[in-house]
Image (cartoon, rainbow, N blue to C red):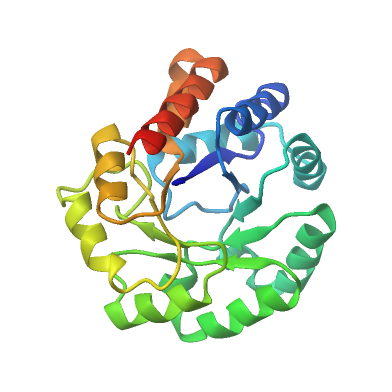
Length: 243
């Protein structure tokens, strides 16, 4: 079965609707939840997710309590998406806190971009605290490095097909996945701007083991509310099962 990895910004659009949303994502067939932890500067996220962070920053003061509530609310793996830049000086404390809460993994989108010379040290540090290191890579990463990190990444290797979330790029998703599939010795999940249904189908047919969806959920919440976004997750689950 193909994996549906669903993203939610922690606390968006408000506490009650956020908890309703993450529960709905799981009930709709999401295999893994990726939770965005408010960063100081979301430099590799697109404008939609940045807007969600801005909304959350207006009211959310205790991220740890809400993460604890999230963990109690759902029974699928939770992967935290945040920026290593924000935590490099206090990484052990972050990892211990996540471990205590029951968080399964962490994904730093800036790891192979801004810390490429030190990524192995950071991956080792993450794993030493009992947290899974989910590694993010992209077409700009050299092929030998993609191959190497695919063997180190836990749960799956996250392959971002766009430069930032929700920003289209005139490059065929299927051709990208066909090439990278030969390099990856792991489960391959495709995301970061994968929002078109046709792209989803192309990705799995080209060899992806799953897709990560985020921006389209946030856009749907903005337009039509949480219930409508949950319905999208049901639609994506059906597409993946059919593909």
